[in-house]
Amino acid sequence: MIIAIDGPAASGKGTIAKKIASIYRLHHLDTGLIYRAVAKAMLDAGHSPDNGKEALAAAIALDPANFDEAALKAPAVSEAASVVAANPDVRQALMNYQRAFATKPPGAVLDGRDIGTVIAPDADVKLFVVATPEVRAARRVMELRARGEDTDEHEVLADLLRRDERDSRRTAAPLKPAPDAHLLDTTHLSIDAAFRAAVDIIEGVRTGRKRR
Ligand code: DC
Image (cartoon, rainbow, N blue to C red; front, side, top):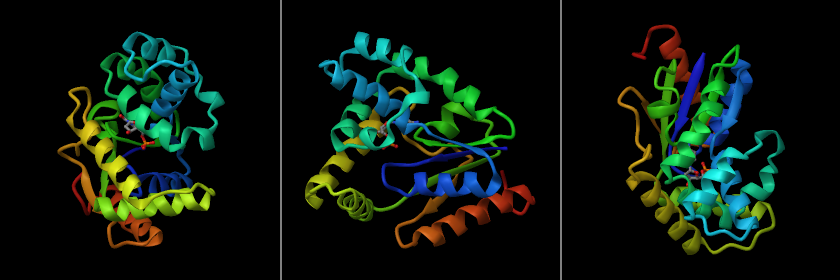
């Protein structure tokens, strides 16, 4: 079984994807980490994230076995990742890895922006997870403060909106729901309620109660 979970930053898709993978005993890939790793390699080497030639070289050299997740989640990397991810050559270079991951037995949950549209268009279930920008910013602030980072809520909201805009407007695999995706709005849901809503959709599809 392949489950595609897409949506904007801090919509809850990552948390839902992890829990879904765990209960269905599937592999899980947070595809944002891949773009973040390319971006961090660029920043570490002193390259601008919009340097296409260097970004492609970094994407080709990527080693997903050696991700330092905490370092990749830093806000400076988020912004650079969104720039790097708009480069079609970078996306192409990262496609085979993601597709191979998706088809590893017994199946996988992948979360990102283009899983249901580009990486796994034949996924068994597709979710598109959304929440209002204000709620997403509040969640991101809580997450950053829990990690001991000093953050300004207005700045976090502005960063999210800028990334949403860039991720949705780019021509290469923009952030958008696949036509057959099930929309899940987590604005007023706790983590637990969002997870249960996701399970309900997946079980609905598996038992034929819901369209695929
Ligand atoms: O999910 P995230 O915030 O960790 O993603 C970081 C950036 O990577 C995001 O701004 C857009 C990009 N991304 C993408 O373009 N396609 C994906 N499948 C996942 C992430």
